[in-house]
Image 1 (spheres, each protein chain N blue to C red):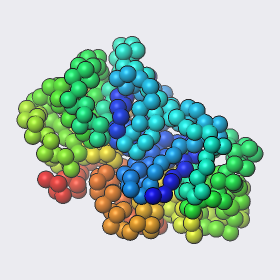
Image 2 (tube, each protein chain N blue to C red; image 1 turned 45 degrees about the horizontal axis):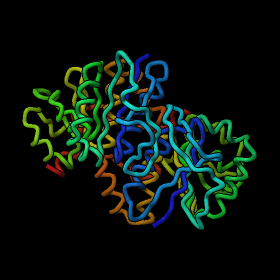
Image 3 (cartoon, one colour; image 1 turned 90 degrees about the vertical axis):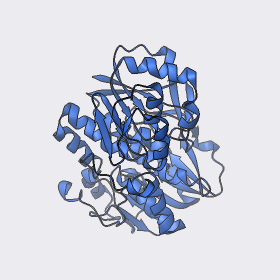
Length: 199
Length: 199
C-alpha cells in the first residue's frame, strides 16, 4: 500500500486532481489518498469545489507519492517562498512525483527539474522559458524521467496516471482500470494533438 | 447564468462529478456550481475525497440544472425513501437533469424516466432490468430525451457534459472547452466501444 499526498491550493484545476484520483483511488489495495494544503482547511478549486484538507505540517509519512496539480492558483504559488520551501522538503521523501498541467512549473521553480525531461500545459508553454535548465518536451501527453512524471494539460493527467499504473503494476492493471471507467486511454505518451495549436 | 445543483452522497464516484464540473465550471459566465447532500456537511467519494456540501433543505433556487452522479453509494440510496422523495421534489424545478453512470438508476427509481430513453454504466446494465418502463439504450455514450441527459459510466460524463454545452451554447463553445482541457471529446453520442464487453 502506497500513500499518495496530493497538494491542493486555492484555484487548483479540478480535473487535474480528480482525474488521476479516480484512477489511482480505484486501486484501493495499492494506493491510499491524502489531501493536504499549506495551512489545511477548506480549499476551493477554480470551479468552486470545496475540499477538506489537512495542513502540510501535520504530514508524518516516511514515504509517499507526491501529486502536484496545476491551475490558475499556480500563478500565485510560484512566487510563494513558504510554499516552495515546503514543496522542496516534500520532494525529498517522495518515491514518485506526479505533476499535472502547470504543476510542473511549480516543480521547475524548486530546481528539481533542472536537467530533466518534462512537459506541461500546451497553452502556457511560453511560461517554460523561465526555466531554461529543464528539457521541456513540447509534443507529449506525458513524460517520465526517472521517478518524475509530468503531464500536459488537465485531462492528460488521466492518461499519465494510467501510464504510471502500467509502469508500477503492469499494463493489464492499467488497461482494466481504463475499461472499468469507460475511458479511452491514450496509451502512447507521445500522442499529443494539442501541441501544435499553441506552439 | 444558470445554477447547477450537484447531489453528493457518500461513495459517489469521483470522476462522475468532477469531469462534468471541470467542463461546466470553466464556463463561469454561464454556470455556477453548488454542491448539496441530504444532510449537508462533509461527503466522501469512493476514493476518499472529502467535499463540503450544503444540506438540501437549505436549497432555495427557483430553477437549476440538476446533476446526479453514480457510484457505489447508489446501491444504498436507491432504497432510501427519504432521499428519493427529496430527489422527486428536486426534479420538478429542474430545467435540465444530467445523470452520470448509475445516477440514472436513482432517477429511474423515482419513475420520472418511465417511457423515456436513457443509458447507464455498461458494467451494471443488468440493474436496468428492475426498471422495465424505461427505454434503456445499450450502445450509447450518452442519451438525451427532452431535458434529461443520461450518460454511460464515469468518464462518459465528460463527453455528455460537452454535448450538453453544445446543445445549449453551441458546438463551438463545447469544442473550444475540450481543446482547452486537452480532452479528445467523443462528439458522437452513439460512440460506445464499452457496450459490448458487458452485455
